[in-house]
Picture 1: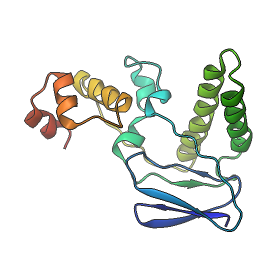
Picture 2: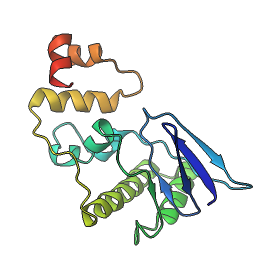
Picture 3: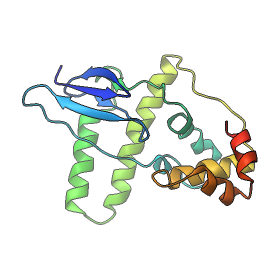
Picture 4: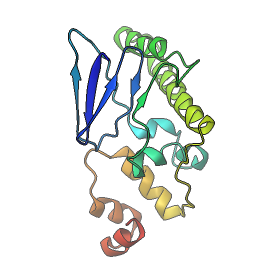
Length: 172
């Protein structure tokens, strides 16, 4: 074990090469053991889909918006073939160098990491939340993912043209 991450009061050990996935609304702290170092990349859920019309891609965002019980620590073996360390290094290099189109390279690498996570879940029969979303719900989820750090229920209800009470009932 190279470090522990505390997420919502639960201690999870991880080591070099592991990936820890934390939702932004979860309280967390990382405590390195000894002289360990780790890389932290903050990703907006909206990076997982191209636009609000892309329902096929939106399904990949849903587990990170409405379910907090997803797997938190992925070992190198879990994400075999994804080469997470290389992808993380490439993300950092592109960020620091700022070469033309570096944003596209970073987005592509992040998408590769999340694709590896979803393939691992699929291979291990992890049940992702499945739901039918009407247009208002899709619109709300997109708005929430794009404004997750400051959005309130009232904001989303307003954006969707719904009363606060009805919005709360639909999304309870």
